[in-house]
Image 1: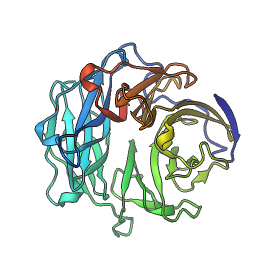
Image 2: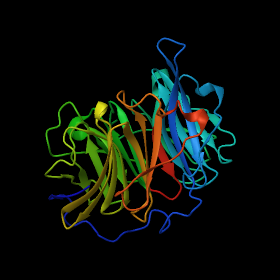
Image 3: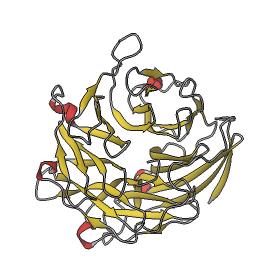
Length: 373
């Protein structure tokens, strides 16, 4: 389905389609997805994170073995670097941690978090890899972590403004990193919910979103460059964008999908944004939005059986993968999770086959090598 929505957001955004990977995905595209299964023999049911990997663009997926310390946590986020290296974030309740592989997932290690984190600060909500040795992570309550040695050691990064004052965060949902810029979505901070560092974490600021969004905040954020970033509010259905590095933000005049959470977004170009959102019992929607001189053209796909929660798009602006978990109204025989791929810019999506031992895995986030997310 295509629809054209006239908006006044990012009128001056560059139309040059800068690369965030190769110009097209290789046939052997490598990616990981993360989610969790639930042990129904316990009450309440106990989660265990699960990670699947593909080396052939999703034609086949393999469930990987995770360390015993991960039992009891949800799989919250995953970030792929190359065919060998990836990081994952897990957490639930008062605890969590960071998982890492350097051998393509043949083995995953539970990385040691730094002293100074209290128990509930170990609930790692979001993670973003920068290179085989560098990554950033954030706990659900706003502790920011950084490693430059492959996760052998993680340091707590103080989130302070240029005057040295601490910037408190209420509930982190998503983060992104590009170059020296780190962006965090504080989902409960209202119109000050965009937390941004433009100097690799040395100083931070809360960026003002001009509308009154009391009781809510940013749920998702994706940065394409140091100047261009996109974000979405909790339950709002609009897109927000900046083309000046967060000095000012603008909101689309019309909603893309009214009253829905944009659970994940991925900017594959300065003017192309992919979205996965959750309509509750109504299922989910995946969309590619192209901005041209302030006008939105949207390719969207609706799925009544699965809530779509994570998306990863290549820089060809044609190829993306989206993942989700089954709705209560879906047929009992269907797997608890689903992976879809598009090769035509989101016009059509094809389901990918999950292995037999992953039929009970609810999928949450996805990350492909060479993609922005």
